[in-house]
Image (cartoon, rainbow, N blue to C red):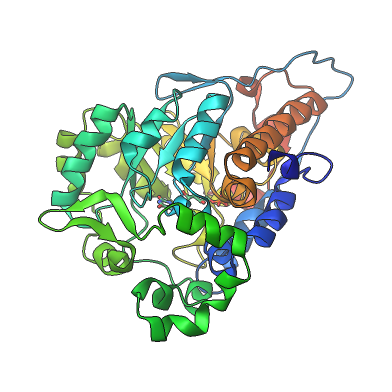
Length: 393
Ligand SMILES: Cc1cc2nc3c(=O)[nH]c(=O)nc-3n(C[C@H](O)[C@H](O)[C@H](O)COP(=O)(O)O)c2cc1C
């Protein structure tokens, strides 16, 4: 399978996206690829990178590039982190373990979603690089507290609290593809939607061989057991994370806390005041509130407000190493990618994730050399041109 994602067939992340589209049923591909409502923010996230252009320093020899950076006290070989992607086990058998293993082989952090299909202990065993646990309060505090204890015991070093998911975004592709009906388990409602699964027999065989996953083993409802896929939407709506929750979360989790889903200077300051150790400027990859500005455009505002007090991380729309460079030039310490590796997972499992990481790494090195810059630590505003109104606030 690894051959199928090598050059010349796969040269970039868009190639992995196309390969994922070929292998996955529409309902699964669209779950990765889609966004909320008109998908305006989803598109804008990527387009924002087109508004920022590079300013190279030519006739500069850069024989080797230093990609290393430090995030939350850990030295990373490059400024890249795999973002939490819920239900990765639907995308590929044991998907979370596969992605963590690929991240571990590259020495980069993997963030495990609360909505993992794999046991967090098995994911922890798959990587020796830093692992972070992403928290949703699905099922409330009673479900979260034991999961945090387990994550700590398994060696997860940081907690990522996602704050942009008061309700699930309106992802219209999921409705049209019958996600609700397929998860509901009633044969008659499922029937109109099953043909999209039957036309992808390889995926279907893998799904059944992997146990036909329908549960989240890390969200254990007291007295009931692991939460079912079908119960998630309602559970999320009843358990919004608020700033007040950070108090008990901080007591339950002694390690570093990262707030994910910061969009404005105001929320960034609040995250600092609440004692967060890092934040992620993110709009959830355009999957939650449609029509918010692209996250790259909001990065300068957040960096100007809190960049000297907290580590600022970034995600949204990254498909090329040059996108990573632009985010670093605007003040991000490191970036997270979601779809870039999820497409790889869909295309070829662990080999596809490894290929996504390799593509971004090679892009980073080449782009730095072409920019005449020897290390990611030296990247600064002077290497880019930015639309003036982005910097006005
Ligand atoms: C299929 C999919 C599932 C996601 N699941 C989660 C999740 O469970 N928790 C979370 O905090 N973010 C989740 N996200 C958002 C990502 O962590 C990240 O913010 C986003 O993908 C970044 O944008 P990008 O896909 O353009 O890189 C998900 C994203 C995708 C594409």
